[in-house]
Length: 127
Image (tube, rainbow, N blue to C red; front, top):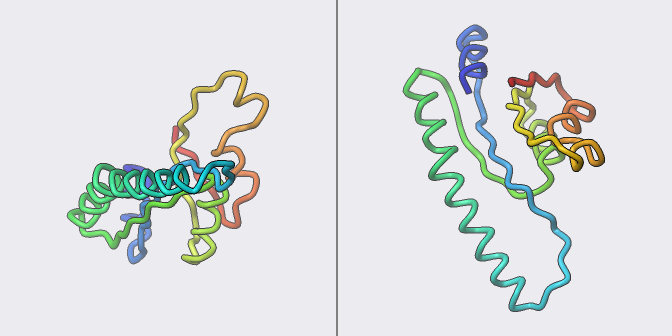
């Protein structure tokens, strides 16, 4: 957030979109009852991420005099960020790198590296 804020201050008139993506697979082999519970859990996760992460970040940016808005989405992290960047006609993506590493990362890659490889706009990765 600090890097995105600094960039926005240097650029001047622009909008920051704070996006929080909850990893979520659309594929499911569950009963209708299980899917209903899953949908409820999904809505609860969105509300929690908005309340605890996105809203405070947006408030902080607005308090600093910047134009900011927030979104919470479920989906594949890299695909969702890239899709939102296209929809919002973003000029840049700034993303924090958060990875535990390990075998899964070596086999499947990371969301950040997938985003960097497939993004429609430049990506700045902040460690």
